[in-house]
Length: 293
Image 1 (cartoon, rainbow, N blue to C red):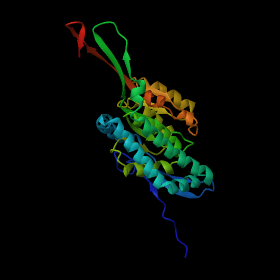
Image 2 (image 1 turned 180 degrees about the vertical axis):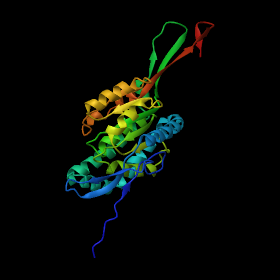
Image 3 (image 1 turned 90 degrees about the horizontal axis):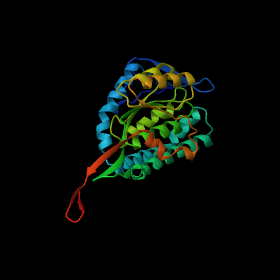
Image 4 (image 1 turned 120 degrees about the horizontal axis):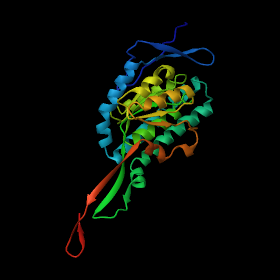
């Protein structure tokens, strides 16, 4: 007996919940054979505003967590992704990858999460400094997270690209709003289900689906974002985002990399989204030249 398939409607992910876009719009996702795979939300400017509010609300608590605990949470996300790897391999195959390439992308995505989980409590020691000064004081510099980071994730990498731009941002204590690939959104939205069932606090990562052509101006002009990451190659969008970043002096980074290469998973990506705080500590001298702190 023939029957119609019940297609999944892939929702957006804001504040730990799965709302439909407030605009009510969606687009039909098809494979190379023009077969309908799913209905995907077409996010709006209002969805972006809601996501930034959720990210801002979550920032203080996430930044205050110990670096070790953030590492535990990233490792937990990797564990959950490992347990659902068959689903993600299947989704990548549906979107056009070979079974071997899909398996490699999922395994590399898991490994990348583990990689940044390990960096969570180590980059501070590497990039902090005791600065040489002349006078009765000490001078210390240490990295601190910037805040809310708006990210337009790679278009041609459904899972690995998304994780590669997300992990260093939250590893460093920031929160983020991500725009997933428009043509390859399945794994991105399924990955939010992994995030929702992990220990990650609501609002730390928010994921929208839709058109970069429509949303890149709003991502870059939102006044409550502290930084922007653009991981695509469209020159017009790149120029617009660079110009809009100047409106409230956001930091802007163009991460257009080959994420399959291990050389592109390094702590300098964490440091891109860090501010350096310098502390001056007076030294009281007394007696025989001894110092009291």
